[in-house]
Image (cartoon, rainbow over all chains, first blue to last red; front, side, top):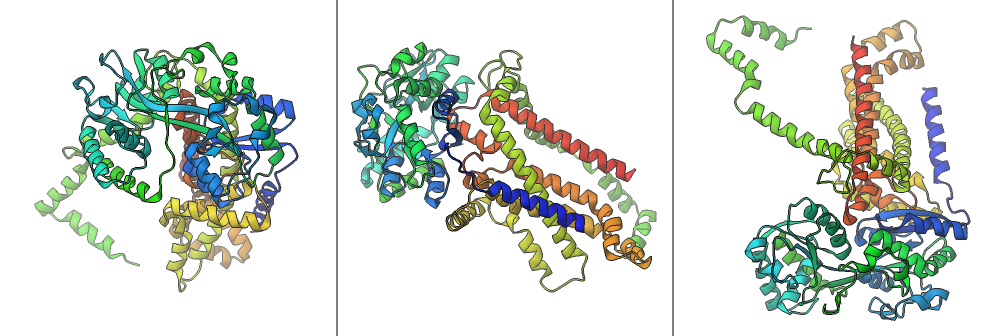
Length: 344
Length: 290
């Protein structure tokens, strides 16, 4: 018995020791999407400022938001997507660190300064941005690919060969664009119309899945709704894939680095935001994550394949990407009902 | 004591009733019934097919987890050199070790307290309380723990991996508890009573008799707790703080951006580790019996 008590006391002591204060001087805790941060960028930052970086990954805005809302996460930097930035600012979760007064702010592409989620950039700095459309195997389908008709009025060659993202927003917004209806739509008639269309179109789809690269490269499908960076990586393994820029429109998104209001290492976090606005460093992010950043002059430092990729460099003829604001709760509820019906 | 089942069984066997004999032979041949083999093979295929594929593609030379090119160990090298994977593995092992030790200790105490005593009022309730983490959906526990720890952190202003270990300890307890309790229920009290008759003190009885007899149950419970802790995603995802990413959470984070065979390589190593663990346990068990 005494032996057990001893060993128990020892382990408890060990656990308490682990639980002790962890914030030494010179730390920075980053919470970013998994597999999205170039280790070289972190090494460079650590060496330059003598700061130790902890990097953890999440797989959805919702998980990150859930943790941050409960407070005391210990994280300094998070990288929410555009609409999530808007929500976090509104709920007072982000610190107003004024990136617009920082030394390297001059490098930010002016078109990314006055964005709906952070007008004037008082809170956040661009991390990566991209588009969500779809990619098609042009050996299987030879016609014009720049139309959403491929998803909703599928030509025979592609019937049963389509993967859609298992993402409510992306699927419903694509349907709304195809019909020419507004985003964040609460019009009953129009919603009923797209519900019918989606249910009919679903007959021609094979799967609804996030693992788009695997779906395409394994030959399981010939068309997949996907993000442009993923499309590029799928093309490297299946060269006949072409990323479409549908004339009806497609989603644009941006992930942004921001500082939490409760950040334990506020000054280091500000250093980091300023650091990633240097073109050379922004290029490091892009080289790893394979998306564009919002920093002017970073192109020179990027690898050649990224600079010329048709998925990253949009053709002049393509419509402007559509950045969708967060919808009111009643609209989200209606979307949820459509989504449930579609997934049945 | 005469067991009524024992007295009845021989008569059935001895009876020359042809129907009974036929029924008995049928029982024996249950495994040979039509469809059993097919079903078994289908089950085996779907149980082990994905794992075999995972292992095979960990040796694939290209970046895909679905198209084979040629044999290579590059993903093992890449996984080993990947800081994120290394750190996550280390965190996983740390958390699993500490919470296994704690959970097994508590489970052993709980098992002794619920079996080595006279049946008491509320015993069923005690079982239910101990096994609560098995009944409550994990996501509920996860969200509740997240909020609970959030408040504690706010009040005491402490942070760290201790919280994660604590959370793991809690849900590991029932897994450790079940085999230990089963073991204790199998052991009758005669040996302990005999030891006490021979003037062994209660401490001596526990150390020399009870403990060695229940050891296999403790080992089994501990291993179960270790594996369960190593496996956990949902609670860890919500409770983990900076620098506390465990391997499953790390892997989950990769899905959006595409899985590489690196993950296959790590999973294969983990699989090998658990096979080794289980084999060791099995060998110990067999030795004891022999």
